[in-house]
Length: 379
Image 1 (tube, rainbow, N blue to C red):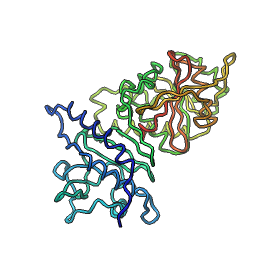
Image 2 (image 1 turned 90 degrees about the vertical axis):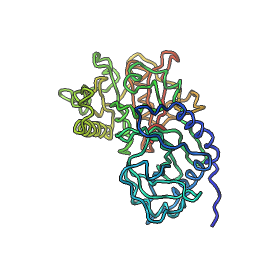
Image 3 (image 1 turned 60 degrees about the vertical axis):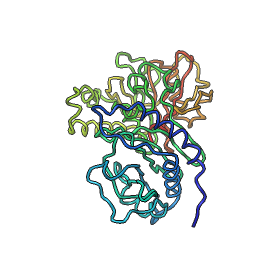
Image 4 (image 1 turned 30 degrees about the horizontal axis):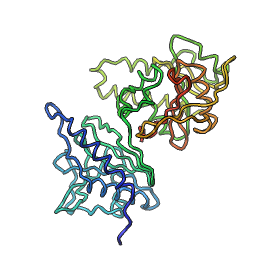
């Protein structure tokens, strides 16, 4: 049965093609890993369309979680190649989804006799490999592989129903933030910030993953002024700072390449992110020492209540808008905005239960708090 095409697939294709054309033109093959072929308009639209309609189906009650990668079997190692390629059909994609729902496993798509087919299952992907991932029903993420063994991706666009968000790698809104936030998140390249390997970026991912919502306050190590914005005593204050993350963060480049170090860092990050699921906020220094959790934020004595913030998003056309903090998500967001206003050398990160993620930081240029909505970078 014929189906209606997904309109956003055609709408976003020009921007996606321009992105890949620009990066292929900048690619230097000397000393670099193999690079994937650039998709054309038909390929982009066909893969997005199939992924979207598959995302709305169910297989034994489960939402399909699939990742479609455009590459031939020759550009991956140890592929599982089907004896008979599958049509790029939403129903078939839904049925095979349970086999490829874990991270790092992709359905390989390539041309066969002029038609796009699913040839099998791929794991390692080449650089600039065009990928469409189903994140939730009606929610797709267009990304590409960096070619690194760690399996890192860079988000290009997010499609949610009829909403199209093209990631802006030069977002001026994200660049106008505190020096602490810039140094910790590497905001000189926002489109790649979550893949930079820094601890706070990975912490954001882990906070979002537990799905309970939570807050993390990053405060200066050399000052106790932040305590003026916290109800004393903190319910779960540490008798001495938890320093595991700080110690791991001081690893040499050689140490950081070792598998044991990477696994230790991941476990330490998840442990701290888990603390944010408790009511109240985790307090951590900019040197990654955890001071406690369950902190209740209050307005600093003598400081005015926060009335509005500038909300930004690292997407094309995502100009800052003035909003009341509670419009971003409620009491937790209002408290974080108040903390960022009263403690201007600190940063507050807030994960919502619905998956939204906001970073609150003081902007000296705007003379107010900026609320950076960054969930498009975390999908």
